[in-house]
Amino acid sequence: MTALVLLLLIAGCTTAAPPETVLAVPAQPQKYAAIVVDASTGKTLFEVNSTAQRYPASLTKMMTLYMLFEALESGRVSKETQIPVSNHAASQPPTKLRFRRGETIDVDSAIRAMVVKSANDVAVAVGEYLGGGSEDEFAAMMTAKARQLGMTSTIFRNACGLPDDGQVTTARDMAVLGIALQRRFPQHFHYFSESDFMFRGRLVRGHNDMLGRVRGVDGIKTGYIRASGYNIATSYNADGRHLIVVVMGAQSARQRNDHVEALIQRSLSPMSADAQTRLMYAGQQPAGSALPGLPAPGVPTPSLPAQGSSLPGLPAQ
Image (cartoon, rainbow, N blue to C red; front, side, top):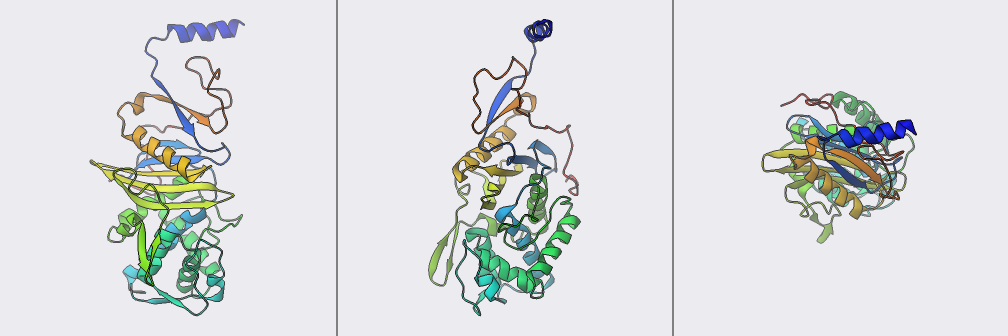
């Protein structure tokens, strides 16, 4: 009783308490992870569970594309190079372009298929081609590249992101990869802003609904498997601000996109730096949750970094 009275007195005597905001999280705590990074400086603006291991799903294709862009830059392939589709690649479950064994796809179309359609058959075909015929070898190459980029907690087992218990990453690592793609391959980053493309005479539409929804959003990639929930890495670049937002574990694509938009608005607001943020996870009730100034029982608050902290492996620019 005495402790409760003391807490109430402290709360009542505090006249300059920072404002508190409640951020709805469309995910369960065990699946949710998020991070917002200033891509110009590497500073972390917001993070929750950002170093907790999660399943990447089709965010995996960001690394497959990184490796393909490297092959383009080195001259190993050109945009006209024909990539063969093996029986293994053709047999991948959707989403895919439904190739038959022995067919080929040019590199330019392969990039668009992975970005826009998130085509699993194409990603595996690219992995086999760059891995000397072995997707397993390519996955090892992807993991080695992840370490080189500073992605310390990521392991790749395949090229497309289909379920594999050993294929894990973190929101922070995906932010590192998103920034690396922009910095290393600015001449290729336009692919990530495409929402459809023509292939064999038909229009192939994508499902990254953040494109065109929020002014300034120019990519990058969505992902979903049942084990991961709905993931996304989003690039925002407008009015002199450049952000990378990663959200993992949402319960639906619509809720995920709403949450990304809220995080962008929060990060652009000058008031957010002084506000205390309380998370309200999916299924939690907002009423009667806490004493003034105290987080609700069992609800972790986001870990906001000290001013000037930056992602490992990404020097400030």
